[in-house]
Length: 577
Image (cartoon, rainbow, N blue to C red; front, side, top):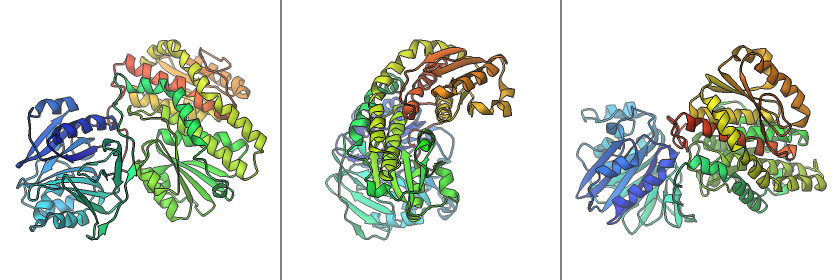
């Protein structure tokens, strides 16, 4: 969601602006920078980063700067609610990611101080002022202990010229030389990932770490890859076209990361835990593996697992799926599963991340950086990774013979080429997109393995076209959904299983005779407009059949003139519950 960055040096404002430009892929509605140049100078704008850049003095000379991209959770979208915020005496500036749950009570504690925003964050700046007694570190520690919720804070202090950072249940890392970021890729070649309940104090040379009780912390750095430049043009389209190469990387990297047999043999229950697209990849893998893996498997939304009553013991394997590795609900669900004794493995596209540090095991899907808010190639790689993992679990438990495992792996090796062929349907999809763009609603239908694919296709279309869309098992049409089929509606039937073609075609004809437009995505033909996809091993069908649906969402959004990479109200990395 929001992104924060802070650094020291003569070019600190320029570097902070560059970091915000990178962080904008996460989604935002306003941005701001605070610069320590004698006084603390504040620059904030609603809208895009370029509008913030236009209001910055060209030759500003500052010692340190902090910056923020905001995605509204408290208070409307406007410049006055953008971060950073100043204390009323001008001695503290703060940026905040997360949610301060007790901000209403805290505002009462600093009564009489004028507030300039409607946010939950501004109160932190005023608390720092109230708690300052000549020692800025003590003021930060006291303030941190007063806060409830999730928060990553950067603080500029005019009193001592230093920068402070606070982390609790929201990502934050340091480079050890005075720079901080909520995304480690904005740092240099190493990062100190701050643990929950920690504070850092930094100048342009050194960084010290403390617990909330003031005890010093010794942290070890991890190596990181520097941030690639965000792609020019449409990121989502580029990322869809990168699916074949992403699948190749995923396959190349999996063998060295696969779960050891000792981790898998006693597994009797598997949860696939995720949100949105990540949940759909788990749901797809769960259905696909039922034919050979007879353990209790279920896909669960992370937010439901967190507050639900799901049985967990040491025979439980929790696969926690998150592209960013920072999804708040998924991180909390992983913590719960660990506390209950489960074996927990992160499946992520970002290393290092909170999830990769937290879990006992981590598998990097190696999809490559995603910048569009709507996830595409990460879904294909998440699904492929999960399917390979389940085959390995079955092999460890002697439920798949070595010959069958070998055959599955051979099928996986064909996927990059199949993905290339699936991308050749673009002209057909672009034509169908004009029909979808004029529809009052678009329904995605599928049976068995194809139903989770339909769910993901529906989510993609909703996310970036803003057209109402739902997904249903095609066998459920007669039980209510058929009442919605009429002229002006489009139905997309996903039919990748050869033994279900006749059933799916019969359902599609029922939709068609009610006046709705029908599109069938299948290797085998079907009803209405046909989008042919290559045939692959059934176990891996969902990796390929989703590609035309991803393209349909993209082309429909383009027809409607939507901001494809940054859809309204959505963020790339959801770091609050």
